Image (cartoon, rainbow, N blue to C red; front, side, top):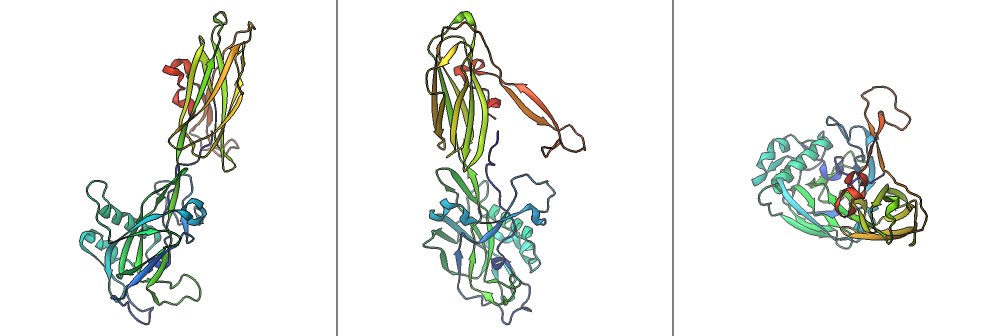
Length: 378
C-alpha cells in the first residue's frame, strides 16, 4: 500500500529580504528611520524551502545540504489562490537606527536571541527564534496574546500598511478545503527589510515596503470506505464461504492506496468491511471482487467505484448467491512487511536493507459486524 504523507513540514530559508538585520550601519548610507510607517505585502508566489517527505535524523542540520530541500512556491496549491487566509502579526521587538532589536514587554525572554542577531544569523536560528516567539504568543496552555495586527489575505487584498518599524512574528490560521488542511509555518519579518547581498545589483537601502511569502504545508484529509457484502443464500454443507476484494485508490494520477481485504460467511446475511482514515479525500477508489467463493456467484457489478469524501463514509455493495455447485473453499489474507536485519550490507535492490516477513490477518468473522482487523487496512 502506498500512501501520501499526512503533511509536509516547512522550515528555514526565510525570505532574506525580510530577515536581514545589521548591528551597525557600515553598509548603509543612512540609518533606519524608526518613526517611518512600513507595509507588508503577502505573496503566494514567493519561493521557500520544503523539507523532504522522509524523516531527517535528530542531529540533522537541514537545510545545510541543498540536496535535501526542494524550492517551491506556495501558489502551486491551486486551492489557496482563491482562499481567504487569516494572518496575525505580533510585534516582538523594536529596532533602533543601527538595526539592533530590543524585545518588548512579554517577549523579553527572547532578548538574548535578538541581541545576537546580525547579518550572519543562519536561517535555522531565525526559525528557532520564530518558534520560541510563537510559544510566547500562542502558548500550549493558557490564553494566547492579542496580535498587534490581524489581516485577512486574499488575492485582491494582499498589503497591510501603517506598521511600526520593528521585528514581527507572522502566523496564519489553518485553511481547510474539501481535500486538504493547509498549515502555515510561523516566521519573523523585519521592518524595514534590506536586500543587500540577495542578488547582484541590489543596494543596501532600507526597504520600508517589503514583500514576503506565506509558507503552507499541505495535509491530506481522509475519509472512510465501507464494503457491504450480502450473501443471499448459503449451503451449510460446504462450510464457510470466503470473498476477497481488491481495493485500489488513485489521486492525481498516482496510487495512494492498494490493499486486499476479505469477508468470510458461515450463513446467509450481510457483513461490512470498513477501511478507516486510510484513503485521501478526493481519491477515486475501485473495489473489485476478485474471489467470489468456490460455489457462489456475484450477481451485482463485480467492479465498483467511489470518490472518497473527507470525514465521511462512502459505500460499495456486492451481492452473491449460491450457484448450486458443490465446491468448498476458503481464503487467507497475508500482510507482508520488511524488518531490519541489523546488517550493514547492501540492500536487496529495493533501496533499503532488511528481510521480508509476514503475518496472517484476521478476517471478518473474528470481529463484530464483520469489521476487518485494523492491520489489514494498512
